[in-house]
Structures are given as structure tokens and as C-alpha cells.
Length: 249
Ligand code: IPE
Ligand code: IPE
Ligand code: MG
Image (cartoon, rainbow, N blue to C red; front, side, top):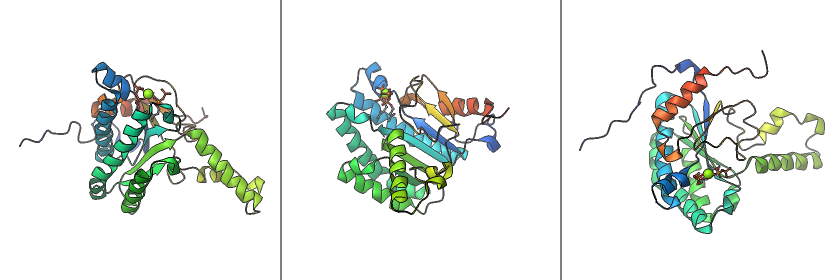
């Protein structure tokens, strides 16, 4: 059988290996519209979206990008029709079960961020297992935001610190940016250098509100299921042309 070669398997020569984003975040948007355009049910778009994410993760590994964070389900997405929500939860569980062995082999360290306790028990079990089984892996950091909301994340950090103050373990004047960040789900990750949003929407939709203070935002009209390595190449190229000033001149 002939195996299809993966396009752009190596870092494209017009990208500067010394200036790659360390951490890329993606808002995987446009699955529903992709499906509608093909006159298919929305869930087909989500299904195809999984393949896109899988290849992007492998691409990060191939190109030497250390961390990838993907927005899979927001705290607001519970407001979708029950049928779609149920499909997504089952899809996450199925994909996790199917892909775990390969992630272990590929040295990927997976983690989940968000309010995980509200997810179905069987999904929580898979999440726990995947995090445990890959915790010692030293390769690509793959973070999946599931039932994640930036505001919810900030509030739970405030509550944790307020509790410590109340119990006398923390002084109010010791609260600073570093301490605050250490209470976020992303405590052990650097802030994203590049956030990609597909399908043309120019908003954060409650994703990584604190962490994106100085992250570069790249929006493409391409719908998530069509976001391939060529599209990712364009995004990283655009990123490398940006001048990050961090408030300085
Ligand atoms: C993003 O695609 C996937 C999730 C939110 C889970 P959408 O489902 O939002 O697709 P559109 O925006 O309706 O096209
Ligand atoms: C953001 O997409 C959430 C995810 C991709 C998981 P949405 O489709 O939910 O965002 P809005 O509703 O267009 O802002
Ligand atoms: Mg959407």
C-alpha cells in the first residue's frame, strides 16, 4: 500500500527555527459551518476537526514547537442543543481512548484545563488516565481546554487565594501577578506566543483571558476542518513578521 506523504513534514525553510512560537493556542472554530457547506449535520464537522487537531499536534512536534493548547469546549458551549453537546462529550472520550497509546509513543504530555468535574464521569476517567499515563513524557505539551472559561478560571484563582487569606496562610499584600498566575490552570505553561482562530471570528470567546495579555492573535477565514499544515505555515510566517513590543518602543 502506498502511504501518502505528509506535506511540510519538516520545518519550512522560510521559517526561522530560532524564533518559533514556544506555545501556540488555537480556537478551533467553524466546524458547524464547514459541515453546513457540505450539507452535512454539524457533528460531521466536529468529527473532521479531530483529524485537523491530530495533524497540528504532530506538526508542532515535527517543527519543534513545544506547546499546543486547543479550545475544545467552552463553559458557554453547554448552551448548544443537547444532542450536539452529548455528541461532543462522546467524541472526546472516544478520541482519547483511541489516541492514548500513540501519544505515549510520541512522548506527548497531555493535560486538560477547565472545570473538569462537570464533565461526564466516563470522560473524566479517560482524562485522568491520559494525564497519568503521559505525565512523565518530555516531548510536546498538549493541553486541551474542556469546559474552560477564562472568567471561571480567574474566579477560581481568586477564591483559592481568598481562602488562603481567610485561613491566615497568605497576606493580601503578597498577592501579585506571579502568585495569581500560579493559581491558574496554566500555571506550569508559558503564556501563548501565538493564538490562532479559524473561521474569521475576531474575538477571544472567553479563552485564556489572562494569558493572552501580550500574545499575538492570528485570524484566518479558513474553517477549522480545512486548517492544514499549509495554513499553519501561513500563521507562523505572519507571526514571525510581527514586532512584539510588550509596551516598549
Ligand atoms: C467549533 O466549531 C467547535 C466547538 C465549539 C466545539 P463550531 O461548532 O463553533 O462551528 P461554527 O462556529 O458553528 O461554524
Ligand atoms: C469558541 O467557539 C469555543 C470553542 C472553539 C471551543 P464558539 O463557536 O463557541 O464561539 P462564539 O460563540 O462564536 O463566540
Ligand atoms: Mg463557532
